[in-house]
Image (cartoon, rainbow, N blue to C red; front, side, top):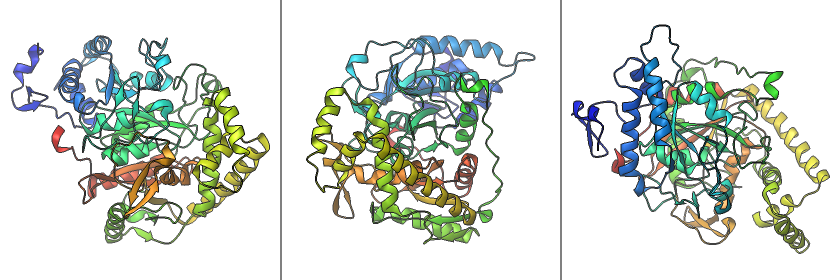
Length: 502
C-alpha cells in the first residue's frame, strides 16, 4: 500500500504514484535543501525512490540489493533532527542514495559478482559509505557490477545483466554500470563508484550522467572490495557519480581523507579552483588518437563543444598533447594488469606463465595482458619509472594548459555482448571493428599517472545515445575539473532524463 502522504501530493506522477514534488531527477543538493526546509521529509523522499525502484528497476536491473527497513529507520531519525533547534544538518541531509555493490554496507552482501560470496554479509560500513552517511545520506541499496569489476559491461551470475536506460539493448558501462544506470533512470539521488580503467568515467559517458575520478589516494578505498583485498591497489580510486556537477563537489568533499591508520598522521586538503568563468580557462582538446580511434559521432560532440568554448572566450588548442599516446597506452596496460593480477588464482597464474613462453613477438592486448600479469618486480619498476617520466611531462603540460578535454570512450554505448573474452568482443568505430579493450586507452592516458578527471554530459549523438566529455586536470586539481563541469552544466548543457524513465 502506498504511504498516506502520497495522497497529499497530486501533481507529479512518479512510478505510478501521484506526487507533486520533488522530481526524482533533482540533484542531491536540491533534494537536501528541500528536506532541510521541510518541504518534504527524508522518509517521504525515500519512499519516492523505493516506489520508482519497484516499478522501473525491472527494465534495467540496476539496483540489485535493497536495504529498505534500515533506510526507513535512518530517514525517520534524520527527520527528527530536521528543524530541531541547534541541530547541525549535513550537506546531504536526507538524500536517498545507492552505492556500487563493491562497497561494504553493514548487513549486506559484497560479492563483486562472484557466486561464492553471495552469502556474505559485511560487518561494518565501508569508510566512504560512512562518510557519506555522516554527511546526511540515506543508503537504501546497492547497484550492479561485472564480475571482479573487470568489464565495460555490468553482468554477473549473482545478479544478472544491467541495461542502459537510454536503450535496454545496450550496455550501461562498467564497472560502475549499475550506479550510472540507476542515476540516469531516476532511481536514486546519488551514487559512488570506483575506477581503475574508466569504471566511473565510462558509465557516466554511456548513461549521460556526471562522474569524477579523483586524484589517486585522496579518498580511502577502505571497505571497498572483497575481504582481504588490497585497499591500496595501484591506480584504483573511488569517487562520486551524480546528475549534477555540483553534487560531485559535495560528495567528493564528504569522501575526502585517508584510511583510519593514515588519518592518524595526515589529512587531505585539495586546493579550491582559481577560475571563475570559461574565458579564464586554457584547454587542449583531443578528439581521437591513432592508438584508439574514436567514432565520428563522439568526435562531433567534442568538436561542437570546442567551437562553443571559443565563442565564450576560452583559449582552445586542438593540437597540444601531453605525452605520446602509444607509449602511454603500453605503460598503462602493463601497470593496470599488474595491479589486477592479485585476483588471479594460482592455477590461472601458472597457465599464464606457460602462455607467456609461447607469445614470441605477439604484441596485441592479450599478449600485453599476459606479460603484465606475470611480470617480475624489476619489470614493474621499469614500467613505473616510465610512468614517472610521463607524469613529469603532464606537469609541464599543465604549465601551459589548465585542462585537457578528451573522450571517455570510443563510441556511444554498444549492444550487449557477453561472448568470449573482452579483447575478442568487437565494437564498431567508423565502420571498422575495434577490440573493446582498445578504448581503455582513454582511461589510462590520464589514469596511469594518477590524474583526476571529470566526465560531464554533452547531450545526445545522432544515434540518440549520450556522449560525455572527459575533463582532465592537474594532480590534486579535482575541484578545477569539477568547476569546469559546473560551468558547462550552467551554460552549455546538463543532465537529460531518458524518455522511458522521465
